View 1 (cartoon, rainbow, N blue to C red):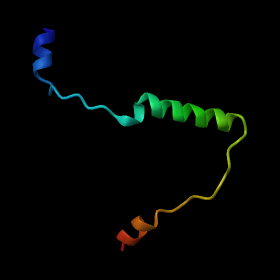
View 2 (tube, rainbow, N blue to C red; view 1 turned 30 degrees about the vertical axis):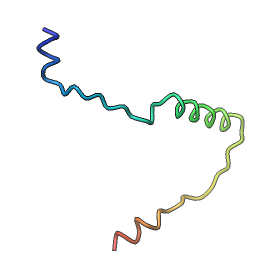
View 3 (cartoon, helix red, strand yellow; view 1 turned 120 degrees about the vertical axis):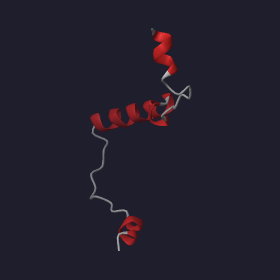
View 4 (cartoon, rainbow, N blue to C red; view 1 turned 135 degrees about the vertical axis):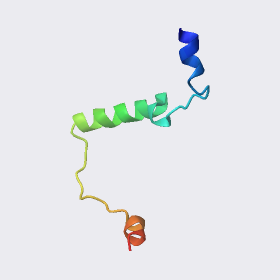
Length: 55
């Protein structure tokens, strides 16, 4: 049965770089820094290129 199920799927495997080991370590370091009180609050930064394209 699993053979039949596998025939229905594309054989390509897509890897999302967001979940790479290096990015997960980077996110953990950022979370640790925020938990330690080392974050800096700032206003929302607008993407000016998007605003220009909305016209």
